[in-house]
Image (cartoon, rainbow, N blue to C red; front, side, top):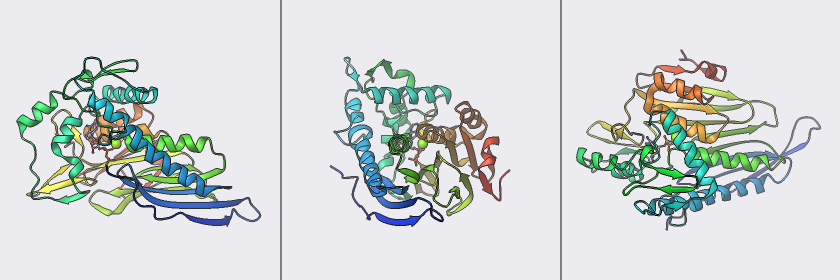
Length: 343
Ligand code: ADP
Ligand code: MG
């Protein structure tokens, strides 16, 4: 069994003073891996900052092991997928039921762009085996026949749900990869809501960012927006105060290149192939982690014209970077985004 929670690079505890005579603030920082990705934490608290960091690490480890993993047989999602084709269906937890309802809601509103039933097609592309990014001469895209056969078992309309009872048709596999990091941010938020000692914090779960509260010096949180054409650089910065979730979906995050063709990890359910809407990256800003992650995937597939109304429907802000380098954003995003090329 793969152990996701492998490295703990240690917790750094700093004691500092919040201004002249202000209350003492501790800072704890940590980088480790969970949910198959890198987790970075920076927490300011009046006390027990280190405990908060280790509690949150544990929450994310359990989220993967107990709930969201498709591969670990300890996870609820594993049991759900194992029940595909069974007439009796499977009863899911209240939490999973609510999560699936939210996914299906975005599926409907996005004209099927976000489709968690797409696991079979994701499996065909073998996305999980791609090493982050890069070239793989041995990679063979699936054939059209294979794609059509896998697509036949996909679609939110084929997933039957009656309250907590779930019925997956034969061959359907649910994949929560498009929303998992956002759910992680929501779980962190739930923890912070119950721990008043935490006065400010910033987290990155594989590049999905949560900002919370305030820094001791009162300055705002600054979150860089990656330039898809040069992933070492930013096209600009989001200046944020208090609680925000920022998720980005991009064709540069996970891909293989064969003979100059880039195959990336966000699949258009209409074709079964990597989405090709002219977008290279989408960043979503929302108060809610699930929405930021779900909408970044959906908007990447839909493109700016269809994606902007979707984001606005959910009260989220969106910023699209086109393959041609153009930048299009919701009006509300302008309040937060600072960058040279903004239109
Ligand atoms: P990242 O994981 O890089 O943040 P996303 O949030 O956009 O990217 O999620 C991409 C993942 O979601 C893929 O690796 C795959 O597991 C799954 N996926 C791909 N296409 C879709 C889709 N159309 N609907 C739902 N999930 C998808
Ligand atoms: Mg996403």
